[in-house]
Amino acid sequence: MPKPASHLLQLLQTQSVAQKVIRASREDLGLADSIRFPFLSIVEQQEMKLALLLSLINRAVGGALLIGPRGTGKTTAVRGLTDLMPSVKRSKCVHGCTEEAVLNFGVDGVCPDCAVKFGLGESLTVPEPMRLIELPLNARMEDVVGGINERIAIEQNKVQLERGILSHADQNVLYIDEVNLLDDAIINAILDAAAQGMFTVRRGSMTATYRARLFLIGSMNPEEGQLRPQIQDRFGLRVVVRGLTNLGDRQEVYRRAVDYQQDPYKFVAQWDFETQRTLIDVQNARDILSKVTFADGVEASGLRWVQALKIESHRAEITMFEAARAYAAADGRETASLGDLRVVAPLALKQRQSQFITDYMKQQQEENEIIQAVINNSDE
Image (tube, rainbow, N blue to C red; front, side, top):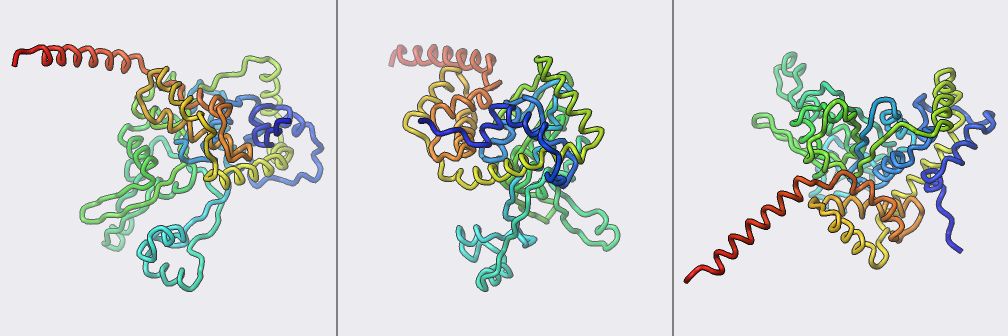
């Protein structure tokens, strides 16, 4: 008899549990810590919710890009994701020293003060919930990567580097709304930092390197302009978010929106039990992720799909495989199956095909064959 899907996967695959929650007794559920619209109360949009949760479980997925018209719940979903964010270990040192650095590099991997603390058995980190950090659309490069603290420079006549948004977003979710309207130089800096997990700021003779282990999420309305292909490729999963077509679902969206507006605390409290339960599931999935491997033949099948679609970017298979591992972890399993890969593959492969690149590569191949034929047939 097949093993039933985990609670987390059941939430992603069906709305039946959520509908029971909204009709549950309102007594003894307690109040949530905030009044964000609950992630689990979003009607349908399973593909969007799946992409966001997989990105939260596994940073190697490369984040998610939500593409769709206004009013389809993209920003609401991302902000609601805050209540499902697990705890991470944050360094108590301004230099970002951690026990992991000591284990990987020895005491030379941390500052002298932290080396002493580690030797005395003191903790270098403290568990804290992840946070959602939203990037303002009008952010300057100095705001993002950091720069000279102008106040200290003026008041104290000293030059001091100040951390930027990227540094503060380390081990947090960085959300870029209207990412297609952001300055190209800024988005490139963010994507490079996210890919490397760190970045360096240079201001004259002053240099500082910061960690940037980001969980990156972007959203955009294609009516307001397209995102350059090379930037779009840096996001792991892509979701096209459309308005719901079922009239009953749209009516339920209206009802929940009205209930939330009339009494947000009461509405959030109705979902608190399922939210806390799902938060535990997400944390458990993150804990077992490192143990998840693939069943025989799964990776070969995925590579054949990428080849058949003529996708050039290697991020396609990296994203697909890492998303499949996250999906298996969400189900509490340590082996990712072909079924897991089939679920996540559309999210990873979507919009990665390029007819221009296909035609260009074909043209280059034809030119190479002509050149090679001339070389092979030439007289010595």
